[in-house]
Image (cartoon, rainbow, N blue to C red; front, side, top):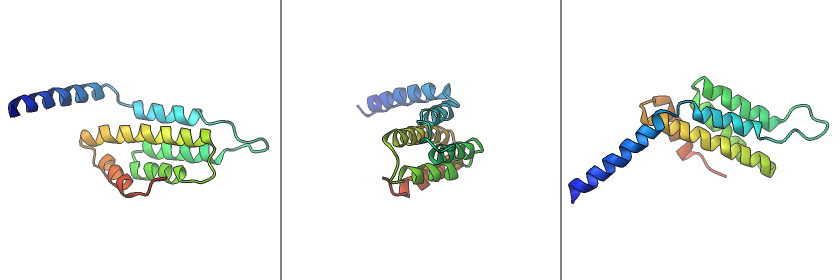
Length: 125
């Protein structure tokens, strides 16, 4: 019975790792989609501070500064005055980043693991 459980667990793990191997860059792509989904800034404003903050977080992630990107998004997600569309975009970006971090941490990336550890202890909205 134990051998059967380990075999089933091995099959699921193998399928999961195999499915994740071909997805490099997907997290960043989903992150970019979340930024693009933001509504335009209110009339009279040329820049959107939320979009700017999300773009800076993406730039940090692209430079493998995962902790900085993750903390920026988590802080932005806790901002009280976000519109529904803004909050959705920030949460989508955070989900994309977390998927990317989990995949990279599983592949042995210590920076990704460090960012996940920081996110675990940060307060959530």
